[in-house]
Image (cartoon, rainbow, N blue to C red; front, side, top):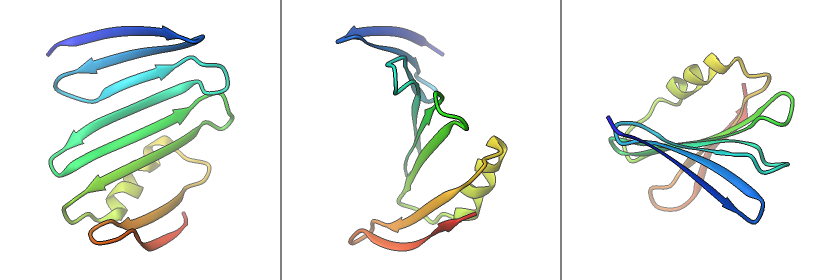
Amino acid sequence: MHRHDRKLDASARRYHWYEDTDGPILCYSEMAGNKGLTAVTIIETSHIAIHVWDEVHPALMQMDVYTCSALDINDVFNAIQMFDPAKTEYKFIDREQTLLLRDKGML
């Protein structure tokens, strides 16, 4: 397992990249008003991306689970519960042919 730490400093924005060839790629932004973590990982059929802003209370998390295979969205909802969310809103979009909104709601 190789870990590469990279720091970029451009236009008063500071990012810390954490890459692991066997796992997700993470980036922490220290830019005022936008502090938080972004991570992406490859799954067998596509990817999962997550964005967490930690300057707000409670923290805001947005996640995109993109897959070309069958997926039980309850598996995703159950995994999200480990974060003990104050509120969960979701949109389930079928991207097979067009952007068809299949479901949306709150848990």
